[in-house]
Structure formats: structure tokens, C-alpha cells
Length: 161
Length: 181
Image 1: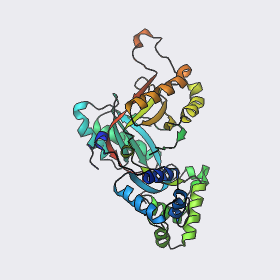
Image 2: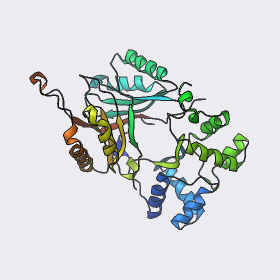
Image 3: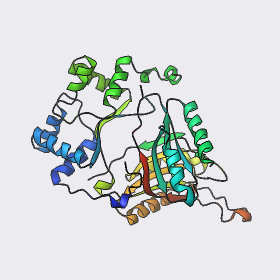
Image 4: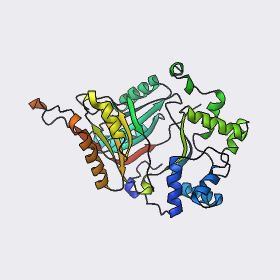
């Protein structure tokens, strides 16, 4: 991934009505069946081949980034946290490289705030997560703001196309 | 793993672990997407489907679905709204914020005073900056009476806000969370 890719430069996808219906339906989930796209095709009143053709196209164009089982990461036995750094502007690129160099850092976003770098750390155990946080502090010489989830009130991303 | 003792339901059998390793980067988009998994695991497609259903019932799989790229769909704007909510109200109001249709994630997280006074995080997504601002205003209306005011000390009058919104301006890294072995 181009680490400096900016949101604003991402081209808006040109989608047909069928594309939009496929995206909306598949975000919500597929039936667990031997031929799930056949059932989707019936709901959309088109052919299974058409659904597969459009889906492969949407993946190739990166309108869809993933298709498959969505695992609850915590249920897989992992531990996670959301953490932040207040990075001096002149060190931003250097610290980005330092933080991203950890395989346990899954997502990292620049955000508009004094705490301008927000990242998710995922590892096998809480102890490992805490070790990564302290390694990041050592590597960057900056204090990490560690905000692990204490309680989840809602998680369900649905973006109608 | 220690949490298996309290939630034995989430412990993976060796075969289930293989299933996760095989499917966590996605399924092929073909007429029979589970066929390849069945071959790899040396079990029938029916058994793969039963395993998938079982994993979903146990909450290990949230759903089998497609994930869109926000930006390609025109959702260029997002806001991580953060709120300093009085502790005794944060659960009740956290659920209420989570029920708003435009909120995708809503969490209770720890404060780190004095650097960070916000305990409720709610993520919103929109197609325009104005839309995201409106969402923030709607959350603010909902939380109005339960926000923590910390400005009674004159010295700190301009130190704490009751809420803020952090917008992402750049993706620095994005990889999936993966089971390694």
C-alpha cells in the first residue's frame, strides 16, 4: 500500500444499479450455503454468473476489499488496543515508519488533533500488546496514549452504496 | 489461553483453527466458494458449511460478507467523535449513541487525565464534511445533559472541552488482523 495515499485522491467508483444492490446485500451478509451466489441471484432477479462477474469486477476495482467470514478478532484469542501518539510535525514521517514497522500494528491513521497518529495494536495476548506499546515508546521516544476498549456498545459498519 | 476457561465456547478445535487460517484472507468468488476449503481440510462441503454455521452461532464469525472500500463508495469523510461523559451515565448513553443509525462503532475507553479526558468514542461516516458535522451535532444533543464539565477551576478554564471530533486525513497503514498460526 502506498503509505501516503490520501483519501481525497481515491477515485469514486462508477457503479451500476445492480452493483449497488449487490454491495448493499453482501455487506449485510450471505446465506451459508454451497452456492450462496445462486441465492443472492434469485433475490436480485439476475443470474448467478452475473453476480459472480460483477463481484469479481468490484474486487478487481477495489470497491470491495474483502469477501468471506468476518471473524470476531477477540474470539480468536487475540488482544487489541487503540493507541495514539502526539507526533511533532517534523518527525511525522520518521515516526510513521517506526510505528508501522511493528507487524502487530494493523491500522494506522493520521488524525486532526494534537494526538495526530492513531493505531490499532493486535497480538496474541494482553501482555504482548503491552510489550508492543512499550517498544513503540522506546523506539519513538514518545509517550503512547493507550485506550483499550472497556466496553463495546455497538459495532456494525453499513455503508449503503 | 486463559479466557477459554471462562468462555469455553470460543476455543477453536485444531480443524477450526485450520479453517480460520484458510479463510481469514477471504473466500474465492466462485459458484462454490467453500469447495476449496473442503478439499484443503479433507472434509465434505456439507461439513465445512456446518462448521461455518457453528462458528457463527458461537460468535466467532460475525457474518459471511463483503467489505466495501469507504472512499470508493463516496464516504470520504469520517469523524471519530470523543466525549467526556459522566461515569454514572456512560453505559446508558453509550448504548443510546450506538443506536443512532450513522454510528458504526461505539466504545467505552479509559480517560488519561490530564492529557485525555474523553471516555466515549463514536465513529461516524459521511459523504460530505457537513454531513459528518451534523452527525456530531446530533450526538451532542443526545449527550447534552450528561457531559462532564471540568471548568470550575479557573486555571483550567480553557483546558478541557466536553467533546471533540478527530477526522482522519491519511491512511498510514491498513492490514487485516490475522491469526498467525
